[in-house]
Image 1 (cartoon, rainbow, N blue to C red):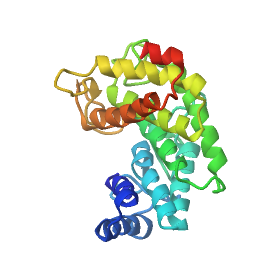
Image 2 (image 1 turned 90 degrees about the vertical axis):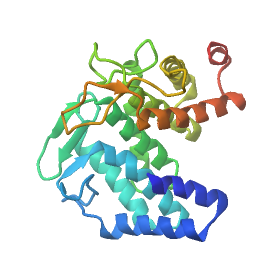
Image 3 (image 1 turned 180 degrees about the horizontal axis):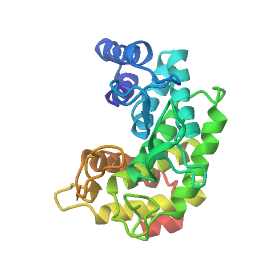
Image 4 (image 1 turned 90 degrees about the horizontal axis):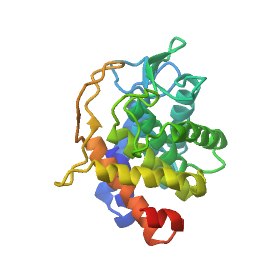
Length: 273
């Protein structure tokens, strides 16, 4: 994820020092990192047979952007492989929501379906990767269709306060600002690239905008984020400010406010906001 940020800086400023660091990250992921049985990258090298949804959001955007910036087809292929593998093996068929993880050597998911930060990682991985993948890349259309299908599910599970429960399909669970911010950020990215229809999803991100503001403390920290995951299926009972809620709320609001400034928000939503 640091590499993805460095790529943005490199394109804005240009720097041999930045380029060297980025190429080292790319070389590590493409050439040196442990692979799963299906050829994807595991979250941890010492668990090479387990694919986590977190990984999709953490590395696929970097690989897609790296492939574009450095004309590196292996990075592009690996990004698509990682995304397609999880969509093929890590989703519950009935709901099209992700499991937390799956074993690459057997059939079936691990952990609950619809852990909201996990859904956020998947949405971010799809949105940011598709923004940089060539439209004629193998699997591009399928990934776009999967993104739209995911958001059809997400849309109907949003709470009245604009956020989502920490376990998306749990009707009485506490809301999680980290996953909510991720989902709103990814939706804004998809609206910018034409993957999602603004006339449908502006209302959703507008509600999240107000919900996150209501959960932001006077010192600027976004409260109500599920804490550090202990393991697959083991989640804390703490809801406090975290790096995920803080960072993705800032990223989401940057995109949302940009649309406001450019007049790309429907008049009704502008008044509501």
